[in-house]
Image (cartoon, rainbow, N blue to C red; front, side):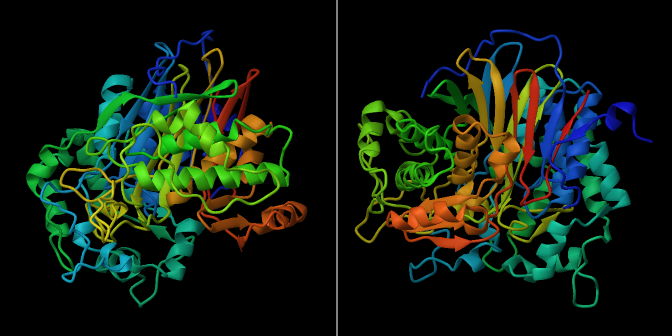
Amino acid sequence: MRSPAFLTRRLFASALLVLGLSGCATLTPKSEPAAFKPVVAAANPLAAKAGMDILENGGTAIDAAVAVQAVLGLVEPQSSGLGGGAFMVYYDHKTGKTTAYNGRETAPKSATGKLFLKADGTPLPFNEAVVSGRATGVPGAVLMLEMAHAEHGKLKWKDLFGSAETLADEGFIISPRLGNYLASAAFPQSQTPDVIAYFGDGNGGWKKTGERLKNPAYAQTVRTLADKGAVIFHEGALVDAIIAKTHQGPLPGDLQPDDFKTYFPKQGEAVCDTYRVYIICVPPPPSSAVSLLQALKIIEAFPMSDYANDARGWQVIIEAERLMYADRDQYLADDDFVDVPVKALRDPAYIKTRVALITIGKASPAPTFGVPSKAVVWAKDNTHEPAGTTHMVIRDRYGNAVSMTTTVESIFGTGRMVGGFFLNNQLTDFSFTPVTKDGQKVANAVEGGKRPRSSMAPVLIFDKNKNFIGMVGSPGGTSILSYNLKALVGVLDWGLPMADAIALPNVVARGDAIRIEAPLMKPEILQGLKGMGYTIQEVTGENSGLHGVMFREGKIDGGADPRREGVVLVGE
């Protein structure tokens, strides 16, 4: 029987079964309300409920994030899981500090730029690499969450996995999104033995939407995780099983016990910058979120409120995206290995040179990368980054907040399973080609112990008085930056409710390729952009999964992407 508190929750997005200022990361709020209504938005109703149950039991946003991730890894295994990685930005209401957590996977210490090259020196086909043993890096999501829980958790770690354990033991109903993936089987992982064994119906077909799926191996893993903690991802039987699985052919990998023992997630100050009267905070590299900040600084030069949802406004978004990606592909990578011009990309003088390339009413040529002050010029990177990811946003009753993007990379990762969960294929986020023909190195080249570049870009939003007012984020591979940018403009410039901003058509502009969700775009805007000289690829069903919440004037304004199954729950 549901509690009265649960019955009072409001559903902002109905989808049941169907979001600088270097050194500014400590933001002292202007006021401190005594209590807050807890909020959780996640990509599956079962995961959102697990998080809300934790919040209503007095847990913190971090406590809830652990529970949400544990359930998502079971009910949405195509997108994230215990075998993947994550980036998170966390706001501590009491201290005003915003912390960035990095649970990105690492390559084996033995890895070199030849990891995804054939014997003749040419790159492996992606469909072969993605299911290979070479594609898996040391998983970091669970270790990252444990690090954050040790600092910001309130409930005991062992008490955060009950929902995941029960659902795995008793079974969960396959949602339409998962069922649709299985029905199409149009992905290389559908041919792996583990995917066939888990999802196959025994008659050469697949389990279907609405059927119950049990996963006793996952239940045992979360029981062990609850009892022993994330050390099981450092050493022991689970690590041995992961290594053995990745050492199997085809294209076996070279993960070793020491790669796991020496892996540690990272934490530090978020990268924050102003956008008009707001402050936006995101994770540092190897997240590409600093490129999102750069795009916002470019857009800031234009009167977007005057261009509200018209062709001029969308043109600015298109050009900002093209400039953002041109620089992102050139410079962003793991800053433990290469110099990333985090500040220089947002320097006012450099931004001015990029803004000068935009002429309102006329399409610009596809831009090349710019050269910020003192930036090291690397070779252009054309990494292929599929859209198998998920995002959650959470606020607890104490005012703390989490914006977290988490992934196993492609659909079902490598399609290889250990302990009831899929292993990531994050190493395919490296550039397959480490150097150009003329010998110029790619910043995102494979190196031992390196973290691959990521488009994951969770966002926290503050007002000019440094009060926390919102959060947003999305899955979507390289398109994550575009999805987040659209939502931020919709909410902050065009004054839209979060749900309406999320539902705006997705526009992804990278070089000469400009994709627009044509059925969602007003015909006059589409024609206006074509009249400016843009060649547009009209598409349907962009794979965004935005979740976001704004807290303004005492109201909670939440939204979940109608393109997926997410929900926003608000407690009392």
